[in-house]
Length: 201
Image (cartoon, rainbow, N blue to C red; front, side):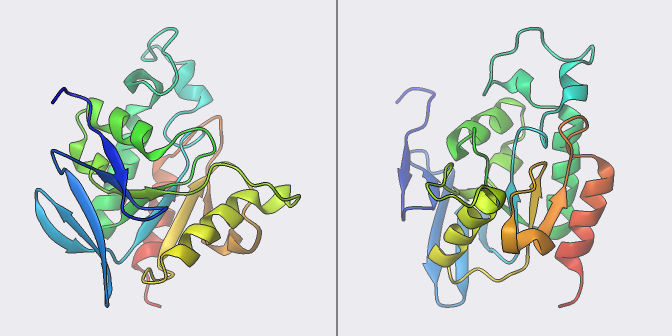
């Protein structure tokens, strides 16, 4: 087969590259199990990850390192410094990723991380939330979509963080680590994510 992976769904929310089988996610009695080429690991912690205002930012797009006219959803559109901060969170917490962007889906995030040479991060992606909400509660739209994912995956504990520059989290605001569009994910927010994901419950 060609270089582009095919993608299938094990449930309405779980994201699994097929054929080459870089990642497979299954459910068991004690939680979700992630099977990768590197072995099998339990999913104990989650990052609900936005993209715009997190892995890219106004600062990055105005910097000398930003490729001019870099199309959306391509490798140049993500900030290496933000990716490094995300990598540190995962290294210290062993968290998995659920993409919770209104503009990017899991396949697009998986592709750009892999193109950046961060296969280790791309393999952490286990799913995505819905990208829209048909109700009128715009102030909590993102939070409702994340809650819908959680409801569909009851094996997951509440040990998670939401990294996002938007404030529409509703009842999930206590789990929200706020970034800004101007700066994106910095080491300051990374420190806060590590603190929340590793503190004793």
